[in-house]
Structure formats: C-alpha cells, structure tokens
Image 1: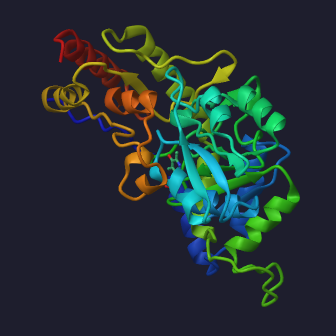
Image 2 (image 1 turned 90 degrees about the horizontal axis):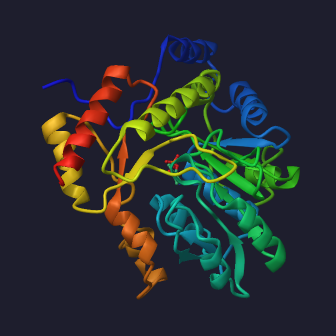
Length: 365
Ligand SMILES: *Cc1c(COP(=O)(O)O)cnc(C)c1O
C-alpha cells in the first residue's frame, strides 16, 4: 500500500535548527531578547497595533489572559463545549465557572443566540473559539457583549491569520490566545502568544508569567513561571517568516478538496470570513467511525476526530454542567472528520485523499 498520509505534520527545517544553535551558543537560553523580538514580530504580522506577550503554552496564555482580565471565583465565562479541553480548563483554573453553550452547525463556533440566553448577572465574559481556523461569529458576539456589558475574549489557538470583515482574529477581544504547539499552523515547540487590547492587560499577563515581578524581587502579585525560553522563541521567529506561505497552501489544498470531494459535507466559509484551515473538517452523517477506520485501513490516509467528547461531558468538567443537553455539539461530536490539509501534502497525496474519501463515502460506509 502507498505511504501513510498523516493528519498533521509540523515543518521544521535547517533555518529553525540554525536559530536554535545560535541561541544555544550564546549561552543565554531563558527568556531574553529572542522572546522580546518574537513578541514584536508576532504583533506586527498577525495583530498590528496590539501588544503580544509570549508564554510557555497556549493553555497558560488562556489562563493568564483570563486572570489579567479579572476573571475569578464567582464569575461565569461562557464557552463552547465543542473544543479542546484547554478552553474549559483555563476558565475552571481561575476559579470561575465555565458555562457551556451550543454551537451553530455551519462554522462549529458559538451560537450567538444561545450565548445571549446564557448570560446571567454573574457572566464576566464570553470566550469564543475560532475552531479549525474559522473565525467565530464575532459581529454578533461583539454587539452582544457591548449591549449586555460583558467582556469578549478569544481562543485563537487554531486561527493564526484568520479574519472577519478584514479584521484579524486576536483583535476583537480584551485578550486573545494563539497556541504554538507543533500541530498548530505554526510552532515554537511548545508555547503560546497572548495579544491584548490594552497595555495594562499586557502588563498584567507579563507580571503573571514571571512570579508577579516587573522589577526583580519586587513581586507585585502572586504569579506563575510561564515564561517562554529564547530557544523556543528562536524557532517561532523563523516559523513566522513561513506561516503566510503555509496558510496559502492550506487554503489551496482546501479549495481542491472542496471542489473534488463527494458524499461528505465540506466545510462552509461564512461571508466575510478568511478560514486558515488548521483543520479541514467534513461531516460524515452515517457511521463516522467506520469511515475513519476505512480511510486508514484501506487507503492509508490518516484522519482525526476533533473532538469526540464535548467538554461538558468530560469526567473533568462534567460537574459544571449536570444534565446539560447541547444538540448541535453532540451532532458535531458524532459526525466530524478532519482530513489532511497541511502544507506538506503533494498533489499526489491530495489525489489519494480525494479518491479514498470518494470511494469510502460512495460505498456508504
Ligand atoms: C491547542 C489548543 C489550546 C491549548 O494550546 P496548548 O498550546 O496546547 O496549551 C487551547 N484551545 C484550543 C482550541 C486548542 O486547539
């Protein structure tokens, strides 16, 4: 059988290796000038005009962003349940309550009407996820948060470079988090970047990542060690010079799949949205698990299911949502399959993915 096509593939080249070597040879490897340069360059590339603060993971970025925005015990934060567990976890880690709300079926992102219905006097903010690289319904959510006097945050872990009406994700919320985990659209090994609406929130995130210190040994607040190393920042800086090209290739791969797949529901793109295809996610309404197994076993094509168990039913988070029923979330968890769309795919790989999907879907798997 032909070679396995993996569902994701980080691209690490000689440039990244040389950048790491440069830092290692300098003898200064912890947070320093590479991190500062990476923050500047990240802002300039993705969210011009907003400060960026680098941390050691996307999850830390969400946690610290929420703390910096004043979220804590007694507060509620509205989140989707159809997302990676880090979204709900980060809210719970602040001591606040994650309030899980349903998604709308086209973009798999928070349903603004369901959000409106879930707002209570305890609601501090709303944390939409730009899932799979498609922007959430920010027009409606921005209006809603303004009307109801609650804050807007962003989980942009999967959405580097996505935009809505010409506005980049990461520029809507009080803060936004971008993950730099290896399978994301760009990586620093591990890492996260927090973009903020104000210098004051950026300052708070910086304090929280470094034991609450701005000046050494004058600790202002109780903080963490969530610093990024210069080794990781050096990798991220190189990746930043390539991610624009990689995103274009993801979009071209997605366009090819859109035009050639049959028998599955291809991912729609909302009006005014730029999708960056962290995942290319189709719906398979009948026997999704059989479909994934057939792709792998009969065609050697890897596919992923993100996410088979919604946050509100995870053993770790279910106590926040006893008896909650989220029908579109459940349907998505049953039906979604993410096909390879990453920039390492050759035309031969794309042809094989199309042939495999059309064969398996045509056979009524
Ligand atoms: C990856 C991811 C995170 C967490 O990022 P890490 O860098 O892995 O900590 C949070 N939210 C979503 C939606 C993600 O995909």
